[in-house]
Amino acid sequence: MSTSNLAERLGYPANTRMLIVHCDDIGMSWESNAAAKKLLTEGIPTSGSVMMPCPWAYEFMDWYRDHPDLDVGIHVTLTSEWNTYRWRPLTVAPSLVDGDGFMHKSTRGVGTFATTEEVGQEMAAQIQLALDWGVLPTHVDTHMGASLARLDLATAYLEVAKRYRLSPMILEPGPELMAELKAQGYDMGLADLMANATTPKLTALYGAAEGKTYDAKKQAIYKQLENLQPGLTYLIIHPALESDSMRAITDSWQQRYWEYKIFMENDTRDKIDGLGIKMVSWQELA
Image (tube, rainbow, N blue to C red; front, side, top):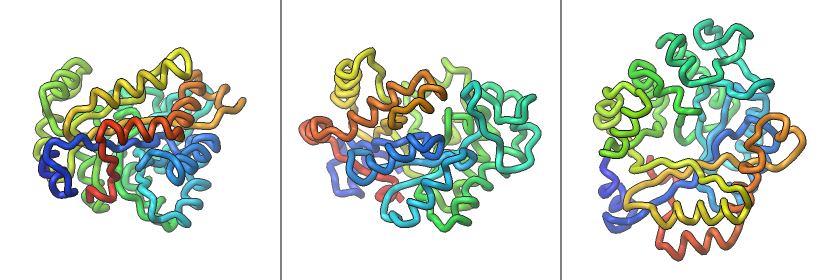
């Protein structure tokens, strides 16, 4: 479905700027969970997704069972990127682990070693576990883009999503996306795969801008909002409360805490409203 048709289906003019602000990496830590709960119930984000192999996934899903109206999907996880805070696949999958028995640290590792069969089984296991825990995810997306590391893995990603009747996070191929795929060495068949998919597609996908200070980061994110083009944009944030544990896990702890604060602010809500941007969710797209 084209984004102009999607806008009209949602009751907006064809050239509307629509936005999903999405909380990534839920389940990674208690701090990530706490920030996401606050944002999804009181803040601006309209969507989030959970890393099912991570230690805090159950804690969040236990809470989500009591908040089924929220938009929460599965953040299909094939990588474990931190140096000393690691996780393993849910399935027995030799091609998905490194020499220490954890998921590969990089998307390159997945692309080099993962088999299509084991990736498909792991994706399905992550979705099924959520269902077994009594929750109904709204969509699937991909941690670090690892599910798209090869064309066969991307095909498996779409097939698993279809099997579970979930919308997959994919983009409408355009000139900018084609250039980005080529620059990053992706199989160009990926563009055809996404173009032929019949599920709703994003026009653009961005991570929240960084900044050396809180105000600099806030203004950089506001600039991203000002520059949104017509269509459906996915703005990914990685919110987490600050703590000694988060400082030990990742150098990005400060950026993550600032993202939490920025998207709790009324100033940010007013900015989005003032720009005429319409907030949407995966539930509306289904």
